[in-house]
Length: 496
Ligand SMILES: Nc1nc2c(c(=O)[nH]1)N[C@H]1C(S)=C(S)[C@@H](COP(=O)(O)O)O[C@H]1N2
Ligand SMILES: [Mo]
Image (tube, rainbow, N blue to C red; front, side, top):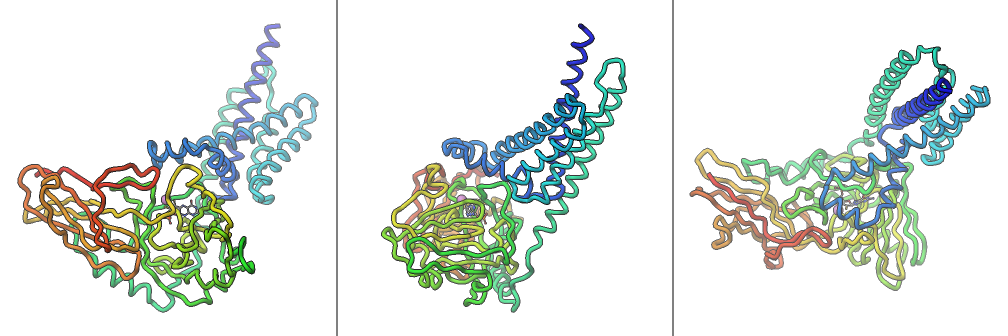
């Protein structure tokens, strides 16, 4: 009696362990062959988890947890992937042992794991990466003795754990190298050196700031990133095309070649996320290479009732706003002289002058003209981020200069209204002085740098505010970024 209890315990423990190894190595194997792409088994699960998370929770996490919020849904998605693959191994173990037909069990577990991975990723060949480790661990588990007395089990467990761990390590390495291959873009778009010249000129007009306020052009590494999905689409220009559909005279399909055959322009455009804090860093500028959207829209001959459009992307992102805002929009395939990096929408994204970051759809796949207004992804979650940006003056650095003065500096941005003036107070807002301003880079939707140096005398409350190109002073009233973008004047106390 006692013997059989212990045997059963041992059996279920062993099943649990081998199923666990199968789950973990199955996920690792998938990563090894797919890398950090949407072909990795965790990716579609993560997309589903994100899509199913209620808007209030998403807004709460963005505000209270910030970037690390990604780790929450990613951890859940890993757990689900490991759990499902472990379950397939558990079924295989049960069948293999009970029927005394180990091969049947192994084949069953492998097939179930493969079917799961292949169906969610639509990658039958790569799904083998997840299925093979599951089959192997099912085999090892089925053949390992579970009779008490016959006990090399402890050593076997150690060896098994070490092997599983080693496999995970190797897979991580392999997956990383897959990523490197993926992030290689299709080469420079700056064939005639125009972009390089533009960037050099912008660098020359940057102010000579001692602190670590960045320059007028953000590098790939500096440029912020906001994605609804953890795993960016990876599309080649050959895979890509965009359609213009819905309330139109004729549907239009735009392949990549057609786009790049159109008149090419290089434009400086600044992007700012509606979800960033008042003095946050989700504000950047690049020079983008592309072509205006208007001629393509005209080709489709829109005739919808609401004069509004839904922009849809390859990652299931969607955003709706007035077609009027699209009149000056731009379809970009280049950024700072290179083809668009994957994380910024490779191969083609939309840029909408003066509007919040969320309207600048990456991996654009379709523009659907509508008959009535609908909510976009963020609007469904309570945000109001499709309109023009708020005016902001950032205070990004304060440095003591060699001569003892303090230099405060940052960027100011007001979308297409432009920045006319930045004012600085060193006494909490009682008196104001004009800050020194950089020229803006050439463009209609760009930021400017500002700086101001003063001789400190004890403690100073620094306040900055901008006046936009229409002469409107940035509102003093403070509000959170949710739902329509942070407002207020940035303040910082400095003492020397
Ligand atoms: N397809 C797609 N486009 C998108 C997003 C996204 O998640 N998916 N995020 C939007 C948001 S909220 C912002 S602020 C900008 C950020 O662009 P970046 O990542 O290139 O800085 O892209 C917008 N376009
Ligand atoms: Mo955003």
